[in-house]
Length: 150
Ligand SMILES: Cc1cc2nc3c(=O)[nH]c(=O)nc-3n(C[C@H](O)[C@H](O)[C@H](O)COP(=O)(O)O)c2cc1C
View 1: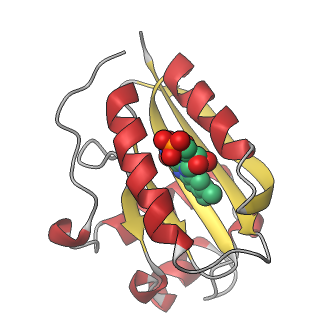
View 2 (view 1 turned 90 degrees about the vertical axis):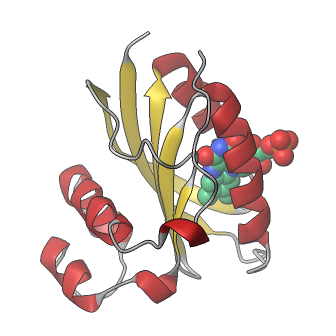
């Protein structure tokens, strides 16, 4: 089955507890590895920006589960397309915390140095994630994908 890449943005629910992020990353890494999904999640206290890549059926079913999650709301799909190779093969779910947000990189992809992902085009959001991801220390990230099935 060929590969797709999708990007969406959402807002944290007011009930969101900062400790929830560890639980989200843990279940993402576990489920995504099983589904052959890779990707990355950027998060600050207000917004999520996530890229998922894998087979079309796997990415779609993951996105359906994610949409039903009460820890966030107002999701907007920024991009969805077929790809011939993955951008983030090293992570079942990589993580970019706010401490890794660089004002210079944010400014390169948007009209402000703040993280305002709803204002990004799909292309800019993808570029921003790739560049921020290049500063993620490998050891602090979720264990990388060992087997890819589906
Ligand atoms: C912003 C956000 C991103 C998420 N990303 C993923 C993901 O990539 N993969 C995944 O399986 N679950 C993800 N989740 C969690 C799912 O919504 C859901 O809680 C989880 O799949 C349940 O799995 P479990 O029953 O195995 O814990 C995400 C949740 C949020 C709020």
